[in-house]
Length: 354
Image: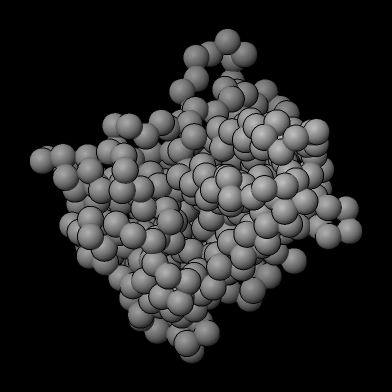
């Protein structure tokens, strides 16, 4: 099944429950906005493109879990629920962006019935387009990988971070479809181990050779020449801030990405960011983007077992900033870009056929 979808029988959002991996592959149904918000917060669903789909489906869900005598009152309650969804995680741009897109559909409706039908249709089309654009992205990125290449990746930017196919891992899948023998080195990605719990599961299910390493072995792996390219996803890309003149741009991605970019640069290993066009935020600069801080217990405990003093201060950011000057290529569904990026290339969203 897709990472996130609509359950026609129960009229709600259904998703792969990523908190259960790797021990159990199961699904979770979000039947209320509270269910969906909690699922986003606890990372049942995660990854910028998948969160975009969650935002769109969230608006459709809100039209079904609210009712009123008049349309304006109904629309106001839907907008309030949509705002809860949009604010569930602040760093990934796709979540709020797709909520806004669906609210635009809501604004064009005149009745509750029309709103329910049109928002679900729009959410389904957005999810379908996510799959199509990630396939196009993968095809563009595959050209950067040589036959026999070993790719290092961080966190999970595969099918389980999108509706399907993936961004960074989508590049790997497309390269293999093109007949290239490509394998992967996956960082564990502490503290929640998305690399070990999710990426390795996904790659092994697709028969891609993968080696799991501790995060702290990434530098040695690059130093020893075990890696031919580092390919990561992104939760937001901005075009301003991060460089010496403030105009280089910044990639916001899972904490640890910046460290990998620095070491890759030191050892002349290409550093590639794979993200759909919708992840490029042309409206904000780097200092305007909030980096989410997670619960301290994620560091004080490991799967419920105490790992540190209960009262030790904790700094637990979920993301970091990688200056674009450390990025060799940005791959989107519209092509491969070499920084510095031109604002004109991202000023307008691409057409679905791009």
